Image (cartoon, rainbow, N blue to C red; front, side, top):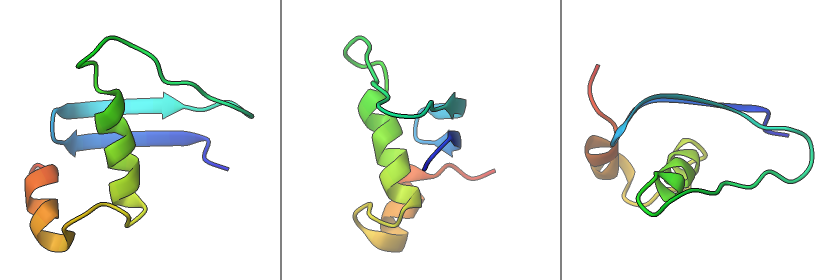
Length: 63
């Protein structure tokens, strides 16, 4: 079970630490708040993002 997600340097996310509780976790927020971007970061780390290495150059910021 995923308990914590740390994201750094991914598109517009400088740094984010998200702790998940047991059971169902719900992401909610305003339009443009980064919910889909957070899910794309999770897909990327699980190897399910699209585009391979070329996509990595677009998604992940150097440093």
